[in-house]
Image 1 (cartoon, rainbow, N blue to C red):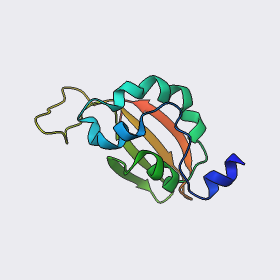
Image 2 (image 1 turned 90 degrees about the horizontal axis):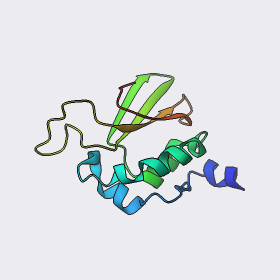
Image 3 (image 1 turned 120 degrees about the vertical axis):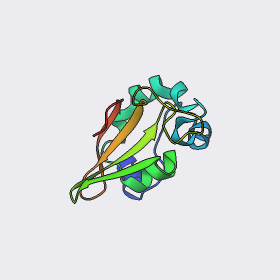
Image 4 (image 1 turned 180 degrees about the horizontal axis):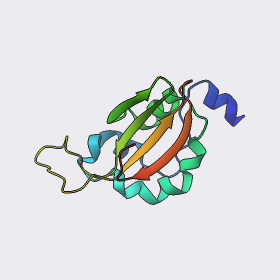
Length: 117
C-alpha cells in the first residue's frame, strides 16, 4: 500500500515534522526547521526509494539543487540559516538535509550534515 502512494508521487509521511513551518522557513532563515531535527533523524530512512516529486510535495521546493553528473543530484534543505538569509554571514557551513537522487530521480540517501556533497 505504501509503495503505491510513493510511486504515484504523492506526499510522504513526515512523522511529527511541522510541514507548515518547514515550508515557510526557506534556507533555514527563521530557525523553524532545526526544531524538527530529532524527528527527521528518526524517520529519514523512510524516504529512501521515494521519487523527487514526493519530496517536493512533502517538504516544498528545495533550497538548492545540485546536479553532480547525469546519474545523480542532490536536494538541499537548510536546517540552520544559510548565506541566502538577509543579514546572515555563517561562520561555518550551516546544517542541512541532503536528499541524494539517482538517475531515475529516486531518493538513494538522506543525510543530515554540514558538509557539501
